[in-house]
Image (cartoon, rainbow, N blue to C red):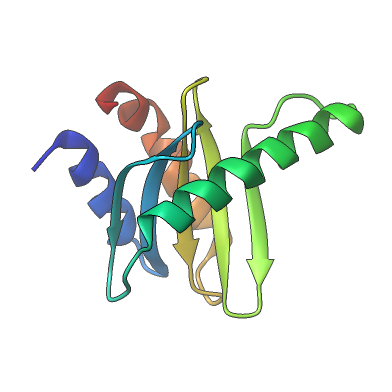
Length: 118
């Protein structure tokens, strides 16, 4: 198993996180793991890269600086995304009852290692 897969599995093992994926800026999924759910890799890649692009434009237009991490809450879960340099994005899907602070911390804690594993 690759180091990147191991790091994503660590994220999925965090209570409340059920999926973790690394997506290139071009929308192609580099690696993804899920616990108990299936991932449509093409759809995930497309929506994550598009969502990050929109979020970056929003930050520039509102003059709040460069994006580091973003979170979107839905009826049935959360998506937390973070940039991996200029080339990729890591995103996790978590349950609504997940500890958001811990989810954000767990992503941030692994960012450099994930980026290095690319």
